[in-house]
Image (cartoon, rainbow over all chains, first blue to last red; front, top):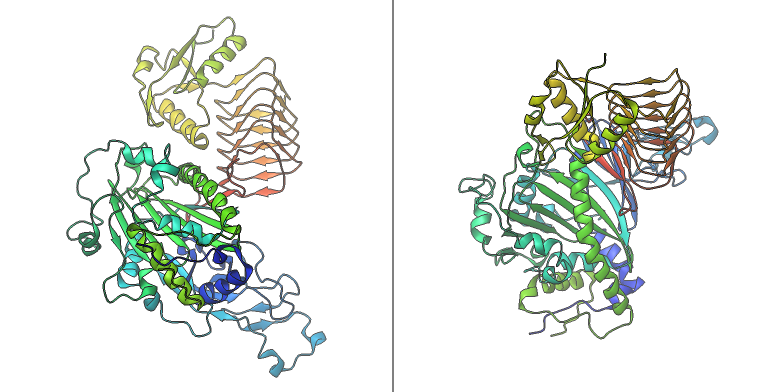
Length: 395
Length: 213
């Protein structure tokens, strides 16, 4: 059976790239940061979402999202990717209040603005939602509620899994010469079909190792917060998949959850942390471009695939451990070790993506044929095309 | 008369330290003990039973595993047993008489340390490291071979600088950094920053509490 697939042009052409920016990234809830990135008053994060510079800043204990552009001369208010600084434009010193309202202009008499002039000089604000520790923004002028985009299962998972992430995290960014969708499609394979081939000596060998017997964990256990989700979706390796129930709409089906058994062996750091999911791995795919992966609850990686161009992806990578036990010092070396391990595996994927990208650029008739075990890719492709308003059925 | 010296540590770097100790103290009784270890941090120190803390001094050598955190853990375990630790400074090192060096530091052959500098405790300066004048090197720092730290620079505790790298004048490197790219560093590098050959940008570590030193 051949399922719906995204045409090759969507991976290579600028016109599709521009539509993605407008229809996907500016009209959906997009992950922009984690709450741990805002430890203090005036902590901020800057990102680009759909080509729009966005600033999230903590003020009076609350996170707010703004367009990161001064209304005066379009200079970014914050110029670093993250940091701690008041809401002051570095160019001419215009400064803004917690709601983005223009508060002061140095040397104001020279500008001679009237009060009426100043009414259009506030920072543009955007809606922001926090789910557990995950911070989302929506650039749409009329955003749909976040509960429309994500099912109750996904929102519950994000809230509950937030408690299994350490306060400490490490973060970096790197780029690859491939379309961002290849990354998302790769991680939403229902049975991880590429793993034995692409990750033969890394991830695949880890999955084949013998594990220790693990007593039932507290995270998904009988009376645990995610018991219902476990009972619905537990089965073999990556055979468990939640694409929502019959009532779920396509937009909710494209974010989903997988959980599988994974051999657990005690590591040097295991006794230092409170893991809740030993012997299992799970992954939460957050449409359109985020994946959270947990290995035994001890190592968690959050990945985001940000399109820079049709053939260029900016990869944002966070790593977490399980919350550390009382008295255990923060361990940057542990999280850097996780980052190294993740990058080693990812480099194997990127090598494939970059080759696939070259083939797609040669304009093959189809980007591929999907089998029954690739329903998730078909759902993703169908919703993607719906969004971009150019649905094409290849069946 | 000097007490006999035990050179000990949980990894094979103890062998180089042992050879250095023999050069420094040719007339002294020196023994080598590589202690068994599991999971980096679980040291088996039963072998120390034959070397009483009253009779022996100890030189500790630990590689830079986990950004020198294992060195801290081993040192704390040794101190808890009552041992007094000594530094090992090669007779082939050139150290200005004004330089302060913390206990348990190791300076290999060819190291140069300029006037007014300070070397923290349990820092390891591998062969041919150059440290200019008025430089502050933190505790548990590792400077690998041929590293050059120009004058007035600062390196925070636990940081490692990889071989053949250099720091420009007045560079400030935070604590718990791992500068594992061979290059010239300058300016200010924040605490817990990790440069690695497999990442195009440094990895930053974030914690709501300061990384404990």
